[in-house]
Image (tube, rainbow, N blue to C red; front, side):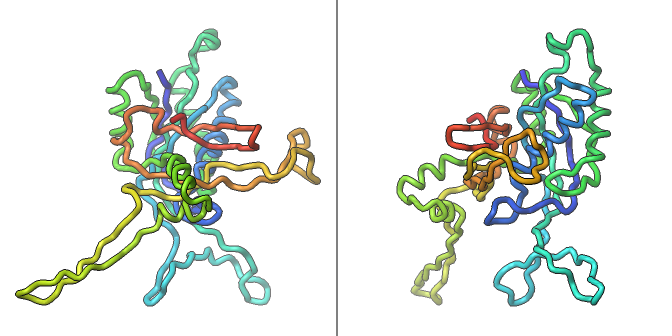
Length: 299
């Protein structure tokens, strides 16, 4: 049985829309897991044994801050209009992609009243109050939290409980990992970028249908390699240098290394498609032999 914390309808403004080093859109899973970890650390001051091992994010609405004018071929990022310099010119800066979105978080937590904590029984109301207070001091995916509905506690102990949770998340889309598509594609195409683009490319083609009694008809068709809402996502980092110390690093006790993003494919699915909780939840995973620090799912 899993103990779950549901934080419904979180409205976030100016979240980081870099979904990978190459694409913009829905914030990367590293951002969501990082935000949940920050929430756990704040709550640990009151609940030292509390852990959030896994979570998922359900997106209800997203407004990507881009603009495409009349006659434009591509979209442009909408700037933040930073204050002008003393000379009246705009300061030099690298504009970042932003988005406004509404999401719900489902967080798995270890039972606060397990055998180790029988001496101190914690009431659900006090726990929810603590979560509410901590959320008001946090950012999520680099964005400001404007509002959220009251958090709820759920237990995934049977099919009815899971069905109730899925109804709470509707309508929305949850991001799942589709690493299997990349593995399959790279058996035929060793270039990872080409294999990734093959799944996200939308092809348009036309066909002329001839008629004897009327003018010829042009039929347009849209084709994708597979069905589904497939997108490129960043799921973690791979170390590209040895562990060591860096000059002026923040934590002198933690080894430092340079790393690059790990990019693969993901798919947005509506909650009713999931048969069990493990298909939804993301957690941290480390593979030290291959220098990988990942966000991934059990399945």
